[in-house]
Length: 153
Image (tube, rainbow, N blue to C red; front, side, top):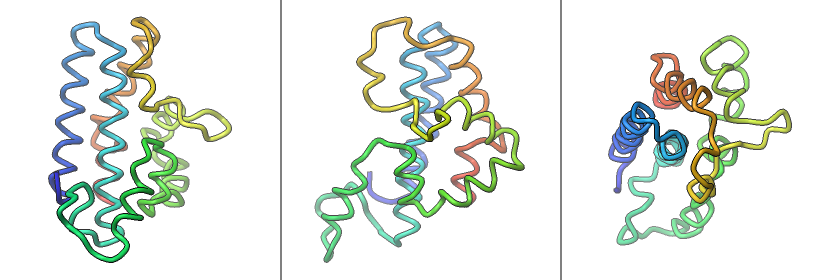
């Protein structure tokens, strides 16, 4: 996984895997993969925002790249929004884009803490509400949803 376009493709693939899990009642795995698709899309945007031809390919070396890699190894969607340069745009867009506003409600607490993180993969089965997972996936697939919005901005 090297270039931004490859990372974006992987993000859409993970979302499709989340759909398959959700359709088969595997809501915990579906939730994890849905969130992971967001993480990947934001990491692709980090590549674009900072004009990095490669983020995960350790063979690519340039001055400062190791520090960037270390910083963006985070799984925190809120932090990745900042690193991608999209935080202010997202805050503005969710005030007029109802799809983004609904995703925001499903993903973030009122204090801005993201409800999704890589630790959800370790939670016991049944920890996710099926209706929330279905709503999140539907909103992510929407043409005005978060993945498309990140991709366009």
